[in-house]
View 1 (tube, one colour):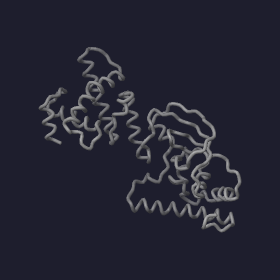
View 2 (cartoon, rainbow, N blue to C red):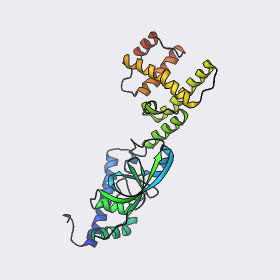
View 3 (cartoon, rainbow, N blue to C red):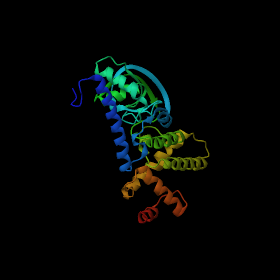
View 4 (spheres, rainbow, N blue to C red):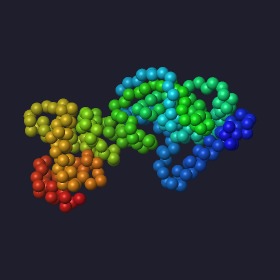
Length: 280
């Protein structure tokens, strides 16, 4: 029995709710005092995540036991609970306490329903059950799982703001359909840079087609840009110690922009490298 339990299930269920509400209010206050972004306590919205990553397919995989801390978002009930499924108001109190009472009495609680993207879960039915499970200190819960496959890997998504980067990366990879190692290598931290890099590669591909007098599809342009331009340039940047604390893709964008601004050409030589080194 919890040290704070009274031994009376109904009273304990009421206290469970009040503690959960108090923790939610204190968490909001701590976020404000630390001046953290507003989205750190907001559930990830399922449809926005799918849009950012790009939907491919889904399949129902049945009943599973999942970790409560893997449930990070909601299909349509984000306003009633925060990121840790603490109630955000008294609106859900009656149903919440009814479920907490049932759980304390050992009654059977139906499994929840979730969508799975990578290792993340998004709840479609059972928000109150998850909230009660958190409040009672449980670590897992039974769930009917539907697995959703997306174009981009959801790794790295923590908060709603992270979806912006994923969305711009998805759009970039539609314009520049890199694959394999090349796809994994192109990473930038500012989502706007994906748009700038996409434009740069398209311009590079246009010049290539002009030089060769032949049409090349996007996949061919993407791979040739990576093999013939990106890899050699990044290799030189490493040798010249010009990458710094940027990602290699960011270093490439910087040096490519500086090179063209300085000499209005797309050729490389030792003079360009020395000039760029002096402008770090």
